[in-house]
Length: 117
Image 1 (cartoon, rainbow, N blue to C red):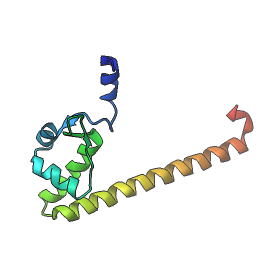
Image 2: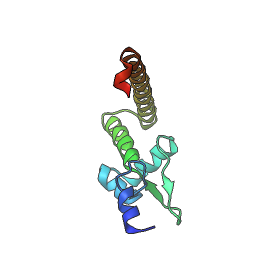
Image 3: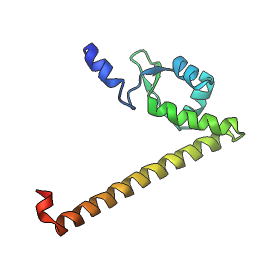
Image 4: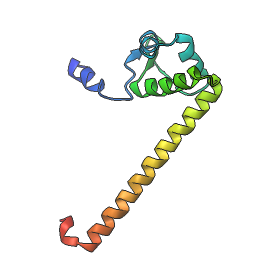
């Protein structure tokens, strides 16, 4: 892997670029919190070759939302469930928007076939 490959991956939201210590520091929480949300299966960090947990930016956003709920008094298990449901809802809404967009595109193309060319 070249340096260019590594730098390119840093733009990838799913690239596990952050160690547990750095992730906890960025979130202003403890490593124990990250372990707890992992045990609750909110996020599953990837493991380095040495077995250390590594987190992506996407996972950090999910963890930050869970922390926000916990900070407002929600039990950690409930916070994790809420975040899972919120994330699923966003995915469903995105899929629906993409489906509608494709339908509108097909309708526009059939109404004006020369515009599609």
